[in-house]
Length: 131
Image (cartoon, rainbow, N blue to C red):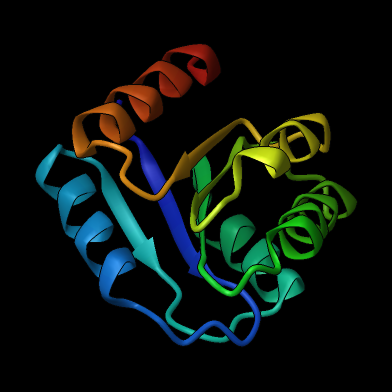
């Protein structure tokens, strides 16, 4: 089964160089990637995830608002009956990792995470969600 991944930029974060690299990397790794573009709301991300029937949601956050935005996306997904894993990448201080994981985020990719590690982690999450 091909992993369908939604990649989103939430909030006012307008930096998209890294997310464009990740999007191409995941496509090159054989995943189907839907990219929402910049300035998405948590509700819009959840609606797109449901409409596109994705297996996983990836958030790229460089604005420092990850502790607010990531849980809001997760909650919006859950409120709409969607229980796919959510991962976060970007500038994530080590001191915030525990809080994000406790909020239900499945994986965190901070600055400098290897591309191979990102792909292998998403593939492992796919194994855990395949029936």
